[in-house]
Amino acid sequence: PKLEPHQEPHHAANAAAADTFAKQQAATKQYQDYGNTLPGIYNNIAQNYQPYQQAGNSAMQRLMGGLGLGSQQDSQNFTQGYQNTPGYQSGLDTGTTAAQRVLQAGHIRQSGAALKGLYRYGSDYENQRAGDYMTRLGQLNNTGLQATQGASNMQAGGQAANTGVQQGAF
Image 1 (cartoon, one colour):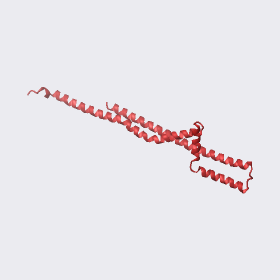
Image 2 (cartoon, rainbow, N blue to C red):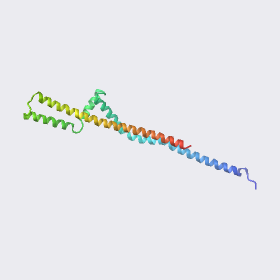
Image 3 (tube, rainbow, N blue to C red):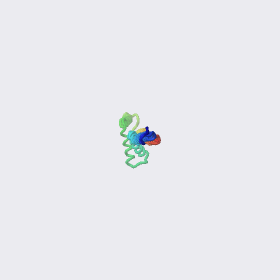
Image 4 (cartoon, one colour):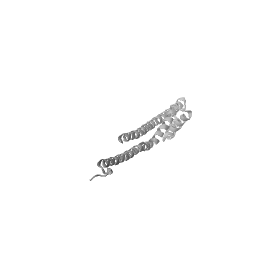
């Protein structure tokens, strides 16, 4: 029996190959579309680092003010910042009260030396508290830097994942 032209074996093979090719193209497109979503997914994850980045930026600005590298307002914000830390005022009050009691008890004559000692206490206290505050700001700044690096790595990872998917699709 003679086959009709559309029933010949090479036509059936061509039709099957065309069907397989169309399915492969559709699957490749889905895979590429998925890859195109990866940078956005990774960027969304990177957004979770923002609070730490913002804290690091704030710490850097405050730290610059404390080092005299910012504006006058930055310097004032630095001073107010460490003076508002927990325990600052109570420590200052305790030391001042103790020095006044010594003066009142007459153990040290009210002289220039006594006033100089009180001044030195206040100055040393301020320097210590400001130094501690700078250390904490530096640590917070480092946290912000690490968060920035983490966010950058996450974004780069999203791009790399997309590139890998796109290259793997072919």
